[in-house]
Image (cartoon, rainbow over all chains, first blue to last red; front, side, top):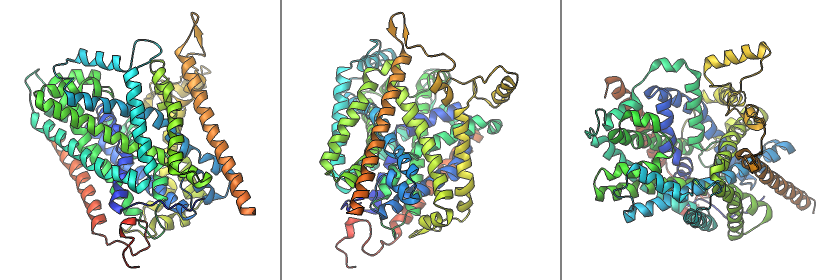
Length: 547
Length: 47
């Protein structure tokens, strides 16, 4: 518990920082790919339904929990949850709200450093005239792919620079650091995105192939196929996208809103930040990567290659088609936009740790930020050195995917059922500058936990291929004694390696599984180190209370 | 673009853009709460 002097400078600054927390690389790279793979224009229907039934409730719950905790001087989830329940379990469960952020920040800062490097390279015109093979080769060289254990000198340096920038801004505090950055980065991000969207919408047919037109790309993204609405896989994909895009289930929203006072609004602030994220994702995010790529490479190429790496391996080539001057401008706009999207999110990921150690151990902002930097460096280096061994993806799976769902499910149950909906509803509506629809009371109590519960259970037990028909096949297989056919990415299979068996050494060398499992143990050790810190903090509180 | 794709894009983007502007405008238009509030920009205002 602290007597912090930290506060937000302005309401607009808070909303921009919250929107910046949510807007990330996924808005431009994950959303359009998910839409393409899940019904095109129809994807938006389950997406918006998920936003209304899961996204908005979670935003309100997290803002309310944060402001509630702030009233008692708590700015991180372990003691926010503790104050809501006074049960020891929840205090330790709240460690997820610090651990997830540190785990994600460790690899996210590495991607952020790529965008910084690519912004500077675009400004220098280094990508001018480079074809797709050249870009592929440049990227692979940059992250030192192909060498087994990766030691990318320049990428490492860029990572250190990016981490230092993050740590410096965090050491400046909320108002002078994070808020100031959000006030510059968010308008620039929207401006860059709008420029690229206008370029995309006005390019039209390029004549490079029969269907090479940005309109074909837009059509591909937005043409509805209503038959897909009956497929639960589409609904799960849409719900998953809402999760990741809003940065719920992480602990960052709790931390940001814990600096608000009881009489200040959270309902309207949450809606404003949430819809701003939606605007960046749906209006700007859908207009850039897929339409421009279809415009110059055709639909078939995009169907075969759509994915995250297009940002680095494809976009500079596409911008090059607009002439050298526009290529430089568009390259800087694109990678600058991604950098701003990245840094506003990674700064948010650093704040739960900052709040926790300042509250509980009385550390200064500089000391807290420095130690965070050291921890993120230690956690991030394995993702760089063992990138090719799958360690980067492993971090993403456990900290950036599974932990979010577990934490969000637990917190909404805690809020609605343990803390109680009467008190919870009062927390959401206190000081509200908008009328919160009463329908959200039963939605938060019943629908949202059910929604997230289904996502969690289907991820836990996902059968091979994961289609609706595969579930009945799996149940038949189980009832006939042939066992459950696990999907490779089901949580159970990931934990126990059921499909492949455990093999750490092959032909005298460590396998990728060895590196992946070691990274898991390392992440577990980090989690328990944080649990130990919470235990020490809890003991200190007891001592202070008795003295 | 097909008509159905055009309808989807206009309806969806119109709704999202409209909601974003509506809520952000409401934030800007709502008068600040009297001191002491959470924000430091008006700390010198009379209470």
